[in-house]
Amino acid sequence: DESSGYESESSGGERAGAAAAGGTRGRQRRARTAFPSEQVCRLEKTFQRQKYLGATERRKLAAALQLSEIQIKTWFQNRRMKLKRQI
Image (cartoon, rainbow, N blue to C red; front, side):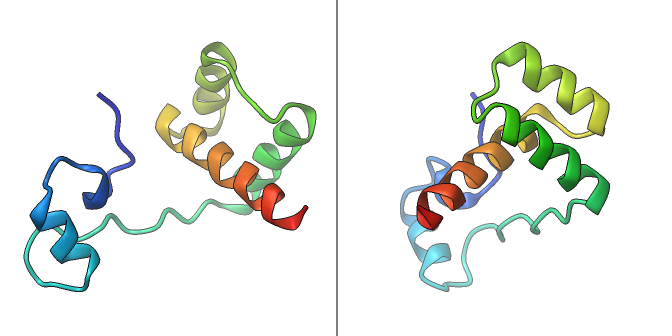
């Protein structure tokens, strides 16, 4: 069961709504990950070659960049959405 770590994705229901609405109950959202420029460059190069990564490619890239597979997966999802907005 994978999650990005955000409260709004958990099964917290009412608590998640309160947290999303600016309430003080529930857990805080995870801090935004700041990727170093070397990692972003490698991620962008990989994205230019292929917009979707399979499990094997994601595992290899995560190991090479010392990131979790979930971070790679999320970065690619966000990057595809950015591309979609630009188009």
